Image 1 (cartoon, helix red, strand yellow):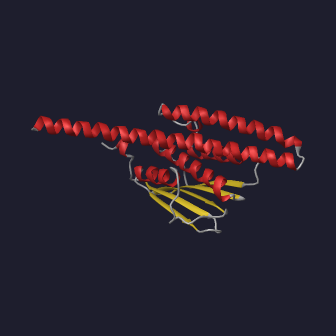
Image 2 (image 1 turned 135 degrees about the vertical axis):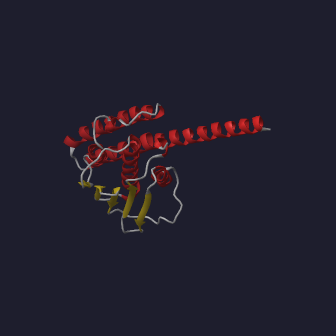
Image 3 (image 1 turned 60 degrees about the horizontal axis):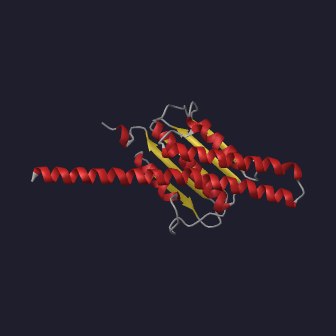
Length: 226
């Protein structure tokens, strides 16, 4: 009986591990390809607008940026499948990676993007940095795809007892109570919960959106717990 129970538990653990890995891959592919395509679309739309307005000098820049975003998204998708850290975090602190992300996604658009860092920056677990970068990417992608804002602000706060990421835009907003397709908000929630943090959305139609991720300093990612 004991042997049968151990076999059952072993099979159950394997199945759980498989499902967790599938969810990770699906979420990471979404965070790279789907979001990268949004950046490509934004640049192509900017190129189309430049054509319509006769601004021929801007067309090539937008097309080149679209190509760069497509290639970078493909590289990041491959890295995700191999469970590697995002390229932007290799040798760079989280704040620098977020700055690069926001600049790349909004370059040549009408969106005024701003990132501020408050408090004394500290080293974070790699999993936390990866999650916070992907969350920032997801929020920005959703804003560009659905909200069409003119302002997008990111604030990274290092406090004595918590680390928080606050993102807001002045776009068309949405009703958080309504169901939303895809991995977007669910992926943000899962990433936040995996770090022992709190995820908050404040939005309403026509009133922009504000998303906050608050992580207690004492929390430790599950992968690092003893």
